[in-house]
Length: 73
Length: 73
Image 1 (cartoon, rainbow over the protein chains, first blue to last red):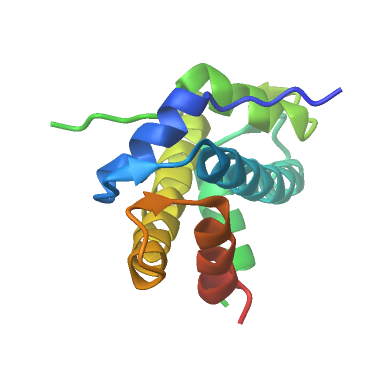
Image 2: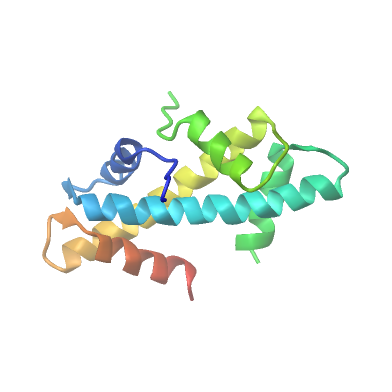
């Protein structure tokens, strides 16, 4: 079972916003998969950082540090 | 004006899926901003690649090559 979380309409709008005259459904599916992968990676890292800080709640600071560790080095 | 495209509920679910016991609203906002930034970058690159291929429609292959160029080198 493949339950996706981001709506196709929202992803379509994001690609259109970049200035695309036409957006293929396959492009929407592809970008959706990619964004969900990024969300998964960042969330796992953020969760680990929140536990490390002694919290049960994931906070913006965890997400920020997770992104920094994953993508900006 | 700040019009965001991804729903807070969907981002909340993605963080929960990673196993977070509680998810702060601030974490949802932060991850949303990040995912929209990624979408914008990938979309712009994909649009350029589709034009380069002589198409007006952005396709999955453009998105895949865009991601490859942006993140996997």
